[in-house]
Length: 61
Image (tube, rainbow, N blue to C red; front, side):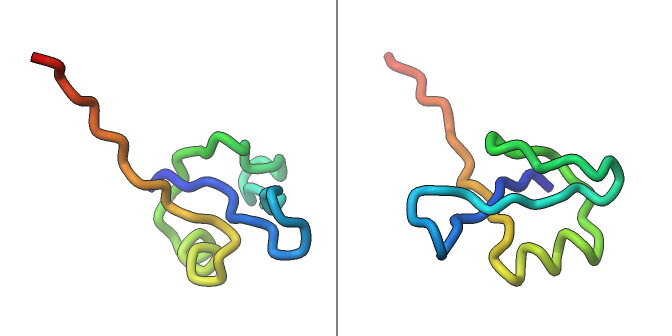
């Protein structure tokens, strides 16, 4: 699943810093594909990460 860091409730306009367990690096602000496992599902449930809406390309006729 593709996730992005969630909004930081303490500092409006900023994103949370979320560590990727496998690399110990930070999840990029642009988002990243991650496995759908217990860790990421828990981060999603807590609001630490969000699944961005899909952007559908529109064909102009």
